[in-house]
Amino acid sequence: TAGLYAGAVIASTDQELLILTMDRAVEQADSIKVTFQNGIQADGVIKQVDAISGMAIVSVPVEQMDEKVLLQVEVLKLGNSYSMRQGDVVIAMGAPAGIVHSSAYGSISYVARNVQVADGTARLLYADVESDARAGTFLVNMAGEVVGWATDEYEEEGKDGMTVAVSVSDYKSVLEKMSNGQPVPYLGIYGQEVSAAMLSEDIPPGIYVTDCVLDGPAYAAGIQNGDIIVSVGGRDVFTIRDYQNQVETLSQDASVAVVVQRKGIDEYKELEYQVIVGAR
Image (cartoon, helix red, strand yellow):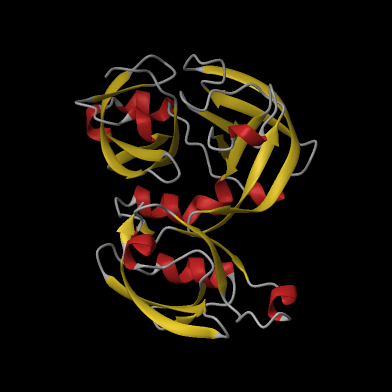
């Protein structure tokens, strides 16, 4: 099906321009046409897709573009979204009005930290700015750097006229792999670190599984809600950062040992699962 979606040029090499866009923009696409701000069109190819974050990277070979046109293409740097605070002004670029090449501006109203996402945690930026997550809206700071993109996954948490955006700093390693055409490893668990209060109740240290993505790799292997993940691939994990770092080292289709502690009638019992690593 044909459709118009916004994208942001996030990298430029001697061989290609890399454009970050929505995964639905390339879904079942027979061909991809990229139209730049100046109206110049070029053919694009899918570099990588991440269905979990709902994003894709499209590559435009520079050999099909005039050198003068290339000089007019501005690369948007990925900013530090961890530095964003309430009151910071942001520009919504892409398709905030539902029309590609539209823009709007507003400010950050709230920053939600440590929101559980698949295989980790992330920040969400709430901004009082118009947006259209479906067509693609990117939040840009006053330095002209991308700090997030609008998502409709958390619509229930948003208010009328409020945009919920994914914090780009949480996805830089994912975007780096995608930009290199590499699949992003995926186990598919939602979890939190075992807190001091939980430890005081004799819950083992590790990652407490609050949910498994239905039919995801962890779910398929038999890992359950309430399990405590204590090691991945032979490495102990005590924090979400430990877990994320270990998942990032995994390879798609590889079998990885995930050790969990599962509560029985009287005590926790250690179980080991072989999980076939998926791709996001």
